Image (cartoon, rainbow, N blue to C red; front, top):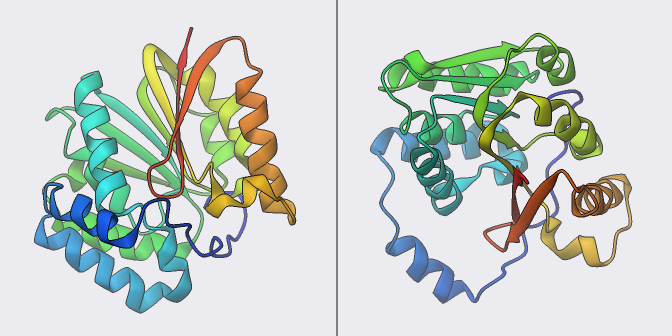
Length: 223
């Protein structure tokens, strides 16, 4: 959530049966207590918007991706309450850096309070304000870029991020299945996700794959 106020996504589509989802979560590395607390506080303070949390399986996938890339610098577009930033920062080396962008003061306040309490908060720098303006001020390269912000700007975020991506880096983009509404788009956000997916699919500069994790995660890298 970066360049405009973001409403909650539609009810998340369950891509696998609930009992299988529960089994997968039970066999994924548990979250540290601080992040369990952050999830609870997000639900308490943010109400329906709490659905925007990336959650345990996706957060752990992002952490593994950062570790596998040997990431030293990570860029996140859409901080929300800071769950995914803390998950990814855990994979950074001691001198690593994660820059996260948002403009929702309530969400940022929660994120900052938990960054201050967490073991990796010193690696995280919050840039408050419109993300597209922030991106103009950043220097490449970033080894991992995670986009999870307002959907109408997805193409703009992607085009602004690609020049900042390290040669062997990866862009991860959340909500690309959008609760199945990519198959029957109705409102502006639905059509924005469909347009983004088609835009990347036609982009001969990159290779991409959609993973049916949670609400759909697209991974993108340069050819």
